[in-house]
Length: 220
Image 1 (spheres, helix red, strand yellow):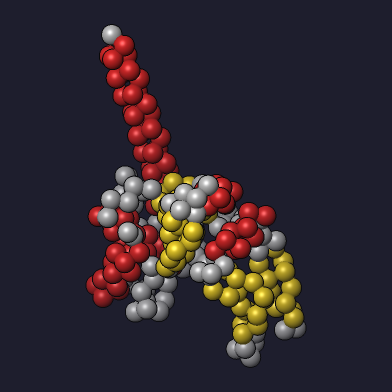
Image 2 (cartoon, rainbow, N blue to C red):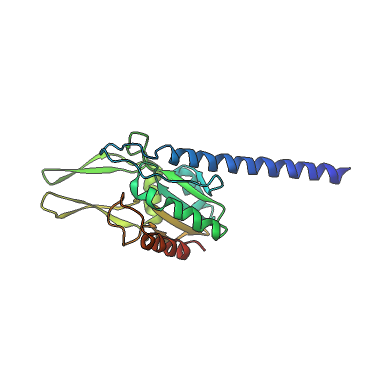
């Protein structure tokens, strides 16, 4: 009797956990597909994507990732956004390869709100070639910059003379995929093929093959 009760409890928990994961996957699917063909602020239509209903993405916040690093966990995290055209260029291939590699969980951190405004990172602008911060990043964003600093690129702006101006900071760009092993950041990729020069161009066979190679090398 006790064994039967224990079995029922375990099965109930399994159904609950599976249901939660499926709900998060469906939320991600709905979020990204909701922008299919929608015109962006620049007047260009967003790329149409088809997201698997059993995709591995689970939306979290920056604090969750900081805690996972402090707890020395092993995981994948993706920084991006449904409005980001480069992200939409690689998202389908990331799911395809992750599933082939039996990667069941990729944590997802959104960088913008629905209006395309920063909700995670800071933002600078140039006024008379002088740097000015117009948006502050969150406290946990700066913690992530410190934890990921060995993998991140410098944050620079380009002035009207095509000169790069250093902000003195690193930057989490989008898309950025990071693999953390036992709390130590190990690898970062964008997933973007060097053959792709425009975020909205057609994804040719060569580009998709390149994306597949990148993600095959990234996902362990």
